Length: 367
Ligand SMILES: Cc1cc2nc3c(=O)[nH]c(=O)nc-3n(C[C@H](O)[C@H](O)[C@H](O)COP(=O)(O)OP(=O)(O)OC[C@H]3O[C@@H](n4cnc5c(N)ncnc54)[C@H](O)[C@@H]3O)c2cc1C
Image (cartoon, rainbow, N blue to C red; front, side, top):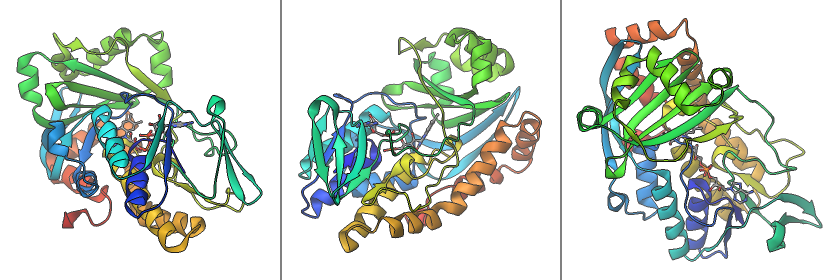
């Protein structure tokens, strides 16, 4: 049984179904939706998605070759050391779930799981009005959402994630093409890039206090950010928002890396954000989701309920990447450090390239 149909859950479903196992995936949303995510897909995620049989070019993603760091009126630009694309999570997640069904997995949509509990040597899954299911193994892939009774430890960083799609003015669209832009502002940062159909995605982390100061109003918050970052003002001049209101998420436990504990429910494999929450500025969360699902299903197929071993191996594999990402995240959030970060990246643009390399999944160079 797999709970959650994002990249992690869909990957597990594809791999288990391909191995001839009976697998059911439960996804709470009835249809594909937009998600709070920068929509940046880097080399390691591209390789994994392609290996799963998803025809990525058919989703018409927007190629990204260059990163631009912006703070105040200054910017630093350098080429990324790997291929990347911008593709909406709505399109990517739907393609992965279609692939899971085509591989033979049963996908139940519109079914929110409420709780998972241990009982008589099996796991009991409460699906609300859909009733109760029983499984020997659960791959937990609910992403940013915790299930009652099986929560990740609280670790709220006081940041709110916000996302909006835009049609940019033609001159701004042309200037953004092939770039991912990381804009630093007081206490937060924003990512801006193109995705399919030449839409632009703006995804940001803002201190909750700053959102409160704007009375929770998106337009007021944007005005204050544009005042601080003229670059953002330029990019968004004459931009047309494509969603009625921004998507939002709070309580993000950045830096979380699940360590096996004695009170873990036996038979539950944590995947994706349920295992690891990497800093958003790396744009590597989807790659980690795909890789964790690949490792967990591989270990399960070889050794059945090897949950403790899986969580240990996973933590060892990503610990260095996670530490570096958390350090970069903290430095980029610190108002006193931001001008120095920008200056250093102007003087030594390869620093951005190096950081991008070191925050990929180990082994990406071979792809
Ligand atoms: C602000 C921000 C920007 C980011 N930008 C990027 C980026 O540019 N690139 C990148 O690679 N990563 C990025 N990430 C990280 C990335 O979004 C996650 O790491 C990735 O989505 C994790 O995949 P997942 O499958 O674990 O979870 P999710 O993608 O969150 O999928 C979980 C699924 O489970 C379902 N679900 C939840 N609860 C239940 C339930 N009770 N019952 C049934 N189904 C349930 C949900 O509907 C969802 O479909 C960003 C994250 C944030 C917060």
